[in-house]
Length: 427
Image 1 (cartoon, one colour):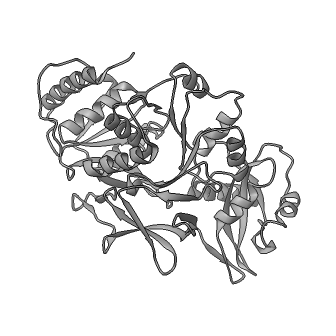
Image 2 (cartoon, rainbow, N blue to C red):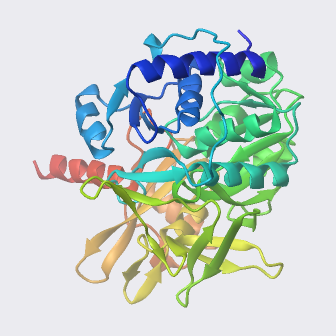
Image 3 (cartoon, rainbow, N blue to C red):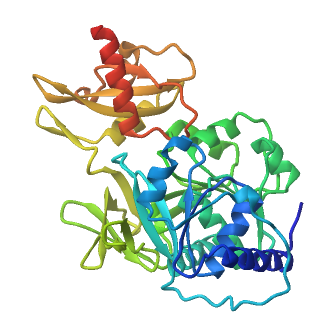
């Protein structure tokens, strides 16, 4: 089914009237399971118009944890999106919003694995979208597939970009390649795992003019293959706290270098940590004790926890995480460097490096890999790494990724899996 913007406006207005009767007023915090359905999209728009705060939750979490998340967000209401009436109304409500109005509260685990609720204003989402629109030259003819979840800032960003340009947001239950062809998709957001699946297809829809990648490191071999196939790649560096994209690069030589988008600023600290600020910087993390967002800014700058450096042309190159760096035998180790080297080995499409305690060196690297050949051993991997990185950076143990339906495995998840493996050996 297709809705015009005029029809959407009437449905949103009807939903606003329904929500008002349910006691939802300005500043109300409303939690809901954010499935990729029209009901969810209309609810987000209606809450925005009512100046209420949308608190979307993941449909991947067990329902038993729902009360915990609702409490963490201090939500006053919980709605079942699928039971909401989508009735048109010719009534009128002033749609004018202030950039300072609170708009969303998104749960994000970040690198620690502990849920935090990031609070964004209308202005945060507006300027995030505006900067991306300017960089990509979006227009009303663009058709963006909603391929990312609406409980992530990346999914919400798609809505705001398209609504500001008058372009189409496409929701589809078809497999990715079928959706690209059937719906004449021009713009697509993916994480590297999804790109890997897409790259297995022989043909990609001719309509595609922008494939935006982010959310996880991109293996060099996958990047090279995608560029050789002529895919219109744009790699990005971003974060929830900056309302999605911070830097982006078109047809990149390296996935970790990009140009700063408008309405964002960055600088490097003396120890090369990336600090950011601008119109897209969030209000802070929600504190249920004080019932306010707690600002994380230091003199106006937010510490990302990422390490970076400036390129000769003034772009930003991402080196790794400050909280992932460890010391082995007196040497600083960046796991991201080892992961990139591993992914240069034919057959290895993804890698994650962790540190483990070692009585001689203090810490040593181990690696989880996805090996499409199923032939690599620790010895073969270490031999292949010899011309790429020094031997003290070579993994001392090698594991296959655990089975999972998630697109991005955190270090915390892998460490827990590693503890399980160790316990099995001990028993």
